[in-house]
Image 1: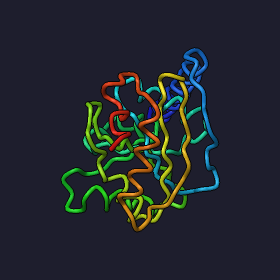
Image 2: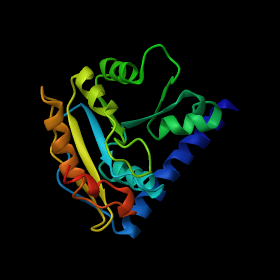
Image 3: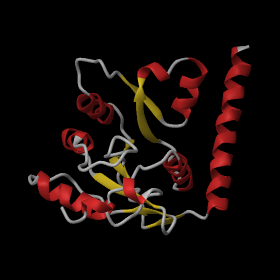
Length: 201
């Protein structure tokens, strides 16, 4: 019985990927820029995040770029039973929000414990309008000593824009200005909630 259960979820995963492929083809999205496949470990900062559709675009782009080993973080309570199995298949990695080890340490450990690890995070941490980016993604990359790849969802051009990969430097403020300059040039589905208002900061 267990064998048939595993086979069912394998078929389910394949079906999800086919749906993502079809969505990508019919929706008109495209990739702009070159993905740096030479990096085996990398933190992908993905923004703007203004709507639930961003998640669908992200999964479809992941499928299109053939980086199905790219991961995302989720609270460990979600990773139970069939849902947990599916989330893992889709790239989910459980983390303990109540652990004495903070999120930065837990995420950095994931990089240290894997030969190849791509992690996608939303720097805003919410779909609501923000006046600053959260710094967690930056400190994860710094602690793990991995580069950051900015990736923008431009709903005006329907492009998933691949930015320039970079390593965190000694000047955190300068790094954030560079990150904000990149994201503020790309409107989200709901422009009032994206990062365009930060471009003059």
